[in-house]
Amino acid sequence: MDPAVLREDMVDSLESEAKNVLKDEAVAVAMRDVPRHEFVDEARAAYEDREHETLGTRVLAPSTAAKLLQAGDLEAGHSVLLVGVGVGYTAAVAAELVGETNVHAIDIARPLVIDARHNLEAAGYDGVLVDCRDGANGLPEYAPFDRIFLEAAAFDPPQALLEQLAPDGTLVFPRGAQPQQLETVTARGERTHHGAVAFDPLLVDGEQVGTIERNRMAREDREHARQRAESRRGWEQEWIEWDDAIDSPSRQ
Image (cartoon, one colour):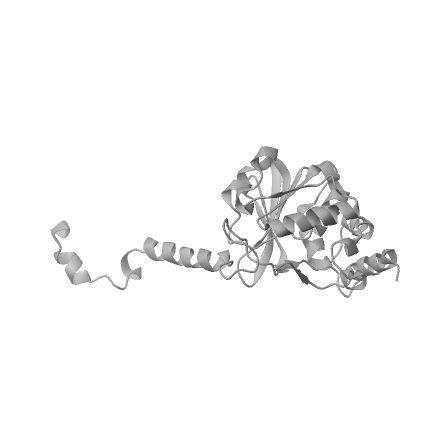
């Protein structure tokens, strides 16, 4: 079947009352224009609303990509940073919305960077800049950004990304482990929730997709637990021997 027809069917499905996912007309038009089959190997499967796996990473389902981009409320001319470019599809849709030379994308996995560059060029978006970076560090030499999209889950957005927002900028990211909430945070610290999502965890420097130690979320969870334990005082610290504490020299 003609890929253009498949794209129309995909977007119509996302706009239907049954799914009620795609509500932003600009995002809908952009998704009708981007040839998703250039980013997912098999043409018919590319337009199904489901995730795919490639090069050890998750390719977002069309409905998830729509949620992410809608939360960013993109406008023509916005400077955009995508952290976790994956196969490049979300970057292509963003390019349709803001102009391809305004879109910058990074990924920690070099094979994905190479694949995304190839896919974007094949789809006609070779003006999108794609670089291999630790996503937590962002892309400071091109900052500030009007919008930053984090295509990986974190408990809180990395501070470097927040510092690279324009004064009126917004960062969009999946917050938490499981379940996750899609959240926006402005440069002024205002937060808004946009519903449940499921993303892979944000990788850190030295990690690559497909390796065992790839779950930043588990380490962050342990670190948060340690910080909470150390911050407890008084009755929360059940291990305190109160008699010893009262008799100690510091109490006398």
